[in-house]
Image (cartoon, rainbow over all chains, first blue to last red):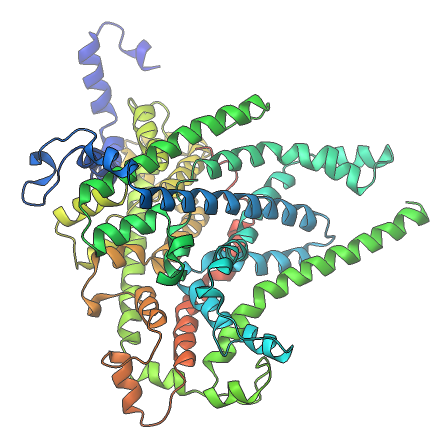
Length: 312
Length: 295
């Protein structure tokens, strides 16, 4: 439309006119741009720390360049691979245990007749999503404490008191269970929304053709949510290097570090508590981001190869 | 429907409800258990084989909290940060979301791509820490407001919502010579009240639950929000000797069940969330998140 209105004006001039024409929209946009530049893109530029010997005295711009020194040191360090392995194992196990549950909840809720019971279940299941991991850790400590209801039950059944939080074999399963407790209900909402978008005539037609509940679930509901499943799968895979700082940081303790320490907690403790140099810590962060990005692209290709839409 | 399939219908229904009720119990019992422990004394808890049904209530834990112990101060800090932070975030996100909903705006796609990119790629903890320190935000409550100014996810939801308003609504105002900012605040926002309420609530819950920035950037204990105070109280395994909490408990001159105090703080931290939950619930079931994850 603008092109027709301004036919004879040279390109550069035209751009200026267009910018002036929309100046109020740009004014609305500027605070957000400043925000993203400062809080997202400056830190992205700060990745250069990984290739420097950073010191506060010299700053990001003045510290000397050292190439891949920090990466070489890191990859040669066994402690790093231990933490890397923890991160991958915890993430993948969370994906395996946690990803299907919201789908299952949505399918079960969809079979509930009447909106009142369905709303009741949904209200209950979604609530933990709105509690922080600090609060949830308090809830978990309370259940698992020495005088807590779990131990009281164990003793009542003739067992011994246990402390699952300091038991190496129990800590990771505890993470998977509590992750489901907090996230599954909220996760199911998006699938319920996808199910609500399915044309009800499909179900009616299937009923007339004699399809039962499971036929319909398999041949109508599932195809109706498969696209959503694909997108959420891609997004989950793209976060494998982030195994859940909030959860683990609020629940772990030194006794279980060997199975619980992930890259994020490791970076935090080493760099901000124990004075590991910032350049090495940044190198770990970059390593995470790059792997996640590769996983994002890879998972997206995979989902698209299966015939779904993917994220991009 | 024939008799046979009716029968299988009801059996399925029964099993389905059993599973769903069980899951609801698993969700509720841990929350209920926090509540009853917060109203318990140590004697009450250990006098029972399994403490699940209290016969009397002990308010000592709440007395400790209301006598000081830093909880009220932390609660007020969290409230202040939540309110100002939500207002700031809404102003930022609504403005940007509206501008980005104008497909004809030159440069709009590039800016949008730049914004969405930050959802998938970040500088990581250390560069972020160095930048925030460099900005002089350490120990300033602004660090709990400014860096969290925009949640990209909510920005995109708002942008998508603004895309759905009919052009005719804005065009008549434009004819009268109103500029875009005026149109946004005078004409578009009044129509957008429901979505604004929803996104504000989500922002507010996020602010209330925020502890990570305070963990990193607030070292002055007197400025810690409630979540971080709770974190510290939970982390202390033994008594709270030398802390505000410890002094308050000592001043009570009677034995106090520390676990009850911890759980009372959990309860108090949950109260605002519970208060807004019915409103949150009303909105998110309407499918606010559909179509937003793809940007």
